[in-house]
Figure (spheres, rainbow, N blue to C red):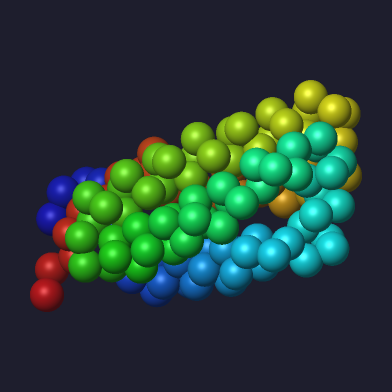
Length: 122
């Protein structure tokens, strides 16, 4: 096994499940999600994009249990996604709970993407 850190299947499954639930909450955004998007001035007509993005992230993380390269790609893309989310909060000077949540997810996905993945021996 290489010196790269391995992201356990449990972590990928947990994060994948989180992304799947988040995708479901974005299909017809619950009031909390809608307010967050209102706060960062995200256009209502473009909000449909979040459910497929988050569903794809869930598939990538869950599929990454079997295919580590897919997990790596997904982690990198989630790092980019949450970089944009944090930027959106900073742009409107929203430094409340939603910005903290986005920053925490940015750090989580960024660290996991930067650590790298190796195939777990069977």
